[in-house]
Length: 264
Image (tube, rainbow, N blue to C red; front, side, top):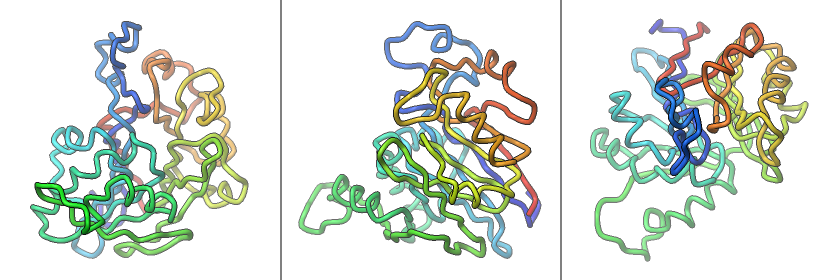
């Protein structure tokens, strides 16, 4: 990795059920193509902060333990949360293992509503009056509403609509990442423009009340002006090789384990 570049590693590219989906015998769920095997959506940003290589996780997906083992991850410097839905936060307890290695608390960032829901759902971590046996993750929660700096890099907050819920995407350097989304406000699109890569969620072909369809995601990439676009948060309706053949130039399907790198 070049010292002045940003990497994006797709830990997971699937929707809330994952692919294959339990009990499904469709062509995608039975596919032998490893790119059709999708754990729940999450990514890892990497960049150098002086001599230190920083690794910042976006969301603690339900599959975090498996993803970390698959990618040989042994350090997480911080976590950025997009929102509080189960597939994006229910791997939170897995951060304990990184605490054991790092021997420090891990800072976690997200909007106030997301962090409050996390505190309620995982009260055994944050409420000293609740006792459960076993080790506890050591985490610090930092509510954010606007852009901020983290390890020498500007973190651009990208508010979007996920049905009626206001959730976050993030832009770091030339890479913008927006997963669960049904509308990108123009104010947010202005913050996305200038990115060289836009990653955006598209759950399926047909319209969905809280997620972009494939065509809507394609239009979002076009509207952003980003020369590269990647589709993530994909369910079993979208088979990797079939959709890849249909996508416009410059666009591709993400898959678990895919690594992107862009210079600053």
